[in-house]
Length: 124
Image (cartoon, rainbow, N blue to C red; front, top):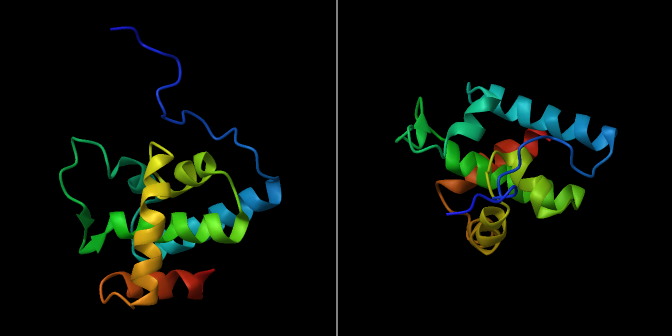
């Protein structure tokens, strides 16, 4: 099997958004992670096969990434590739796929998701 140079995984932070946006977004991500007492690097490792749990200290990492990706995309209008990287996904298709699900959660005030979402809105 031939290995291609771009497999969908973003290998660095050289994405097309301004330094101001970069600072603001990273600050939001850091504050959000600090609130839930997780290391921002855990967002990027939560999907790794070696880590079987989706929770850390009772916090659902997947929901944190979903909330972050939706917030970043809607408020900064970045391409999904950048959103995926900033929210800790390895591929841009996950935030695209989750968009309608998140909108449904917000509209119907999903009891699990809404707590994470409202916390993000307070921090941001």
